[in-house]
Length: 573
Image 1 (cartoon, rainbow, N blue to C red):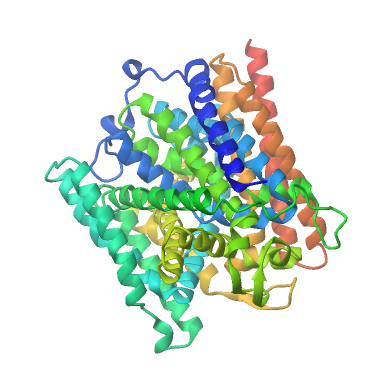
Image 2 (cartoon, rainbow, N blue to C red):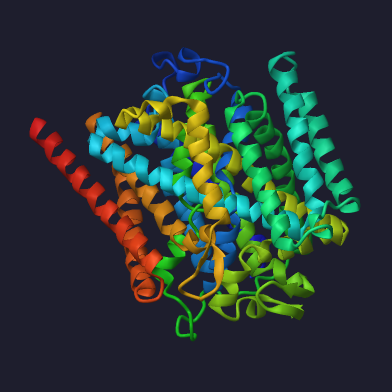
């Protein structure tokens, strides 16, 4: 099969989903009536976190915040099972689960005065559910902050040509924010200039790499970048949202859309054949079970609980009109599904164009193809996003870009997605800690500076604390040792968010099957994945085994709370 066919199928499904299914959700469940809704961005406007924002600017912030490295890594790893399972889960998951989840979290938060989904759980289910939700979210975001900082640091060290274009974005974004919000200049011309500057500095990066390893050991260079990234994210989370976070995400979104456009252009120009089988033989030695692992391997590319945190944590506080939520909430997830689609295609077709290369987990390869890259599960999972960088780079060279420029552009694409998520996650963690302080009457957490320190310090410890991985015996950073539970825990958060949304709209006598069915599916998948992991970690990795048991307990606790709420509602009726 030709890769162009996969693109056509994906675009068609996403277009139909947005045009028809999002309209159904908007009209039948979420009721997007601008005249009847007072938005928190206006009623609580403070010029820092709450600020009414034009939908195209907010879309840029929301999309780049939810689209981190996970929708790139997940499909690349999942291509191990073949192209068909990954394609089906990306398309079905995005249209009927992930986009409905994100859309609902955004709308519901706006209708509840900008409260987070965790806070809404207190009135929808119980205060115990709220406390459990908040604790779980805090732990998950600490892990996300640690791993994203480590991943960006790794890329800065391995691709030093990406340092200048990524960091120049900060200066351009601050200038952009000043022009848009202080000088009230229309965004069109500054956006074009900013986009041109961003790509100019991508070229500058290829000629002027910033490599700390010239003066210090590799690990010291990575540690220095981690420290700088956490300092940056702390400052960015405290600044008014219009000064850096929002304009950086906005101009980043343009750069990322152009990058995705170039990748799809490369697919149409090179039109490589799909090198992978539709479904890999599950009898191959060492092949893990397709169910449930596929569904937690591709997490953010189909449905992600973290998206609900972004939607209810920052985006709901900036929404200018309720009707904009369809484009931002549902459309943002369609954008992420598109990223997952192109990531999958680079893995199953693009890598066949690479030829000679060097794989992180394998070493020198004379002629790269799917069967070489995905020869074992261990290699596929260790190589992570290499298929995207290598395959995507090959697609870009097919349209005339030089190899150094193509590789730098691919690295900038990955880092930009990860960096915007790092910014937003730090701000969200501050909001969540504020809410946790209110729920537990710990007043010190209402201080934005104290909350920011608490948001950062545990993540820093995860990044710098080296522990022995019981599975391999290798000493690694704690964040990487804990990372295997991210996929399942992220999906669990999505299931819990869908539970809150289901009960919320059931009490309002709205049709809830579009929320209930995804909730049941994701909850079943998550429980299966956690049980599978628990069996795998038992006797091998005590830390992950215990954490899996804790997560399983939390799921059953939330199910219990939800079931009690259902009984209460039925008694009242």
